[in-house]
Length: 589
Image 1 (cartoon, rainbow, N blue to C red):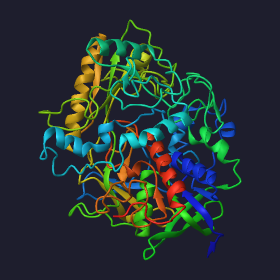
Image 2 (image 1 turned 180 degrees about the vertical axis):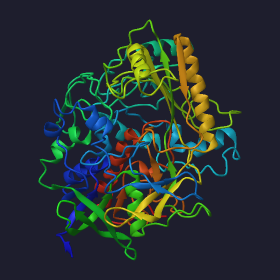
Image 3 (image 1 turned 45 degrees about the vertical axis):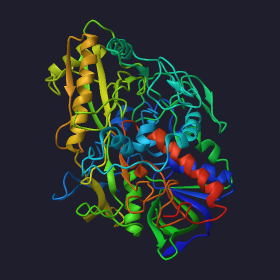
């Protein structure tokens, strides 16, 4: 029997970055907000403390902060004519679980999209002609511009205490920063964090080739910092434990360390952890979600929570699954190209390299995951694609820092994966290896999508989300181009040897690549090609606001979190300043 609870003003489904931002902004506007999080609560002063937090086996290998595959997972196939199978152990991507979500274990690279990214279909058409875009490439312009979102990028930068070197402040280009970035109203809140020895070598080599190296922007405080919520972040200690692990000094920004301390003190906020939302209860005639149903995983009891506003702030797969289960929006059909829910799934196309310097002491253990130097010369429309046979691009980085004892052992290609020879190689090269990466875009393709699996179900009996994905040829050409540019920089660094690591032609979910999944509930100006409008309000349910990277029309050549946070603040302003005064569609189709 389902227990119906007292109405609340708003409910968030998930409490990662976007759930916390929305809950905080709505409570400040006077609303009573309940946040439902299917994982446990995570409190920095209790859960992210020494010595337990520096446990690479627990967090880096056994993935304690990640999605619990024994309760929920997804099925995967490369092509639509294959049978999808459940992912029993997540590998290629690592969705987080619990308060803070994936924002706890991220590497904290904190980017803004390029101005041209927001109008990419128009930009390509204007530059290369109306027929340049392939028929199966379903990219579309965002319904917002860089200039509209920039104040919210700035707000999120300041919440996170981002460290970096600006390259364009109010139109003035600044050497040493990213001169390709859009105009910023302000410099970064903090100075850049330190660069590793290998990254400094990379910067010198890239500059010698005429490129424009700069330190990666990271949501890791290089000095103690107090944000607008009155929360103080500590300075990075360069401890060597960062990726897949929480930060014991609160230097690496997360919702837990930047927003939750203030939100927890607000009497209008209530957190309910271990509560698995199973259904959005949808009144199709009224075009609104009347309530959400959830199971308390601690006792198995089922509850219905009515709410005036519903914020869907889960990971990409959860957002899409909830809409499909509730019947909100037309499911996407790749055969016809009709429908919107599940459409335009995209991933991040990464390919890396390693180089070896027997006469250089690189000390890879010291540092953090974000201690990178990058070049952005070949990202988005920063370069001419004429005659190249592809669109898109990405940034190229040297990220040799924070190499923990288990996963941080870079050895030359051909080294055995275990045994005495492997041991000798790790001893020989640990202090003398540099790692590189190309972080490429994935422009949406008609064949890549999400839907409900017809066979497999989760622990509560709901159909699993099914992912159909394989990178199109466009992305392989783009990645080969970036790798060739990276190879040129590596050669200029004069290593004794190096290895390039291109992606295989068939995507596999086994080795980790990136947690940058996007699409499925994309934003747009037309309900026929989008799920939400420019304010992230669902076309088919005016009180439903969908947050996160699932609203991205395609994946550009940057980590998504900076844009995810900016869009959440943008959406929150639309709700608090407009929707609350007159509940209904904020944009009419």
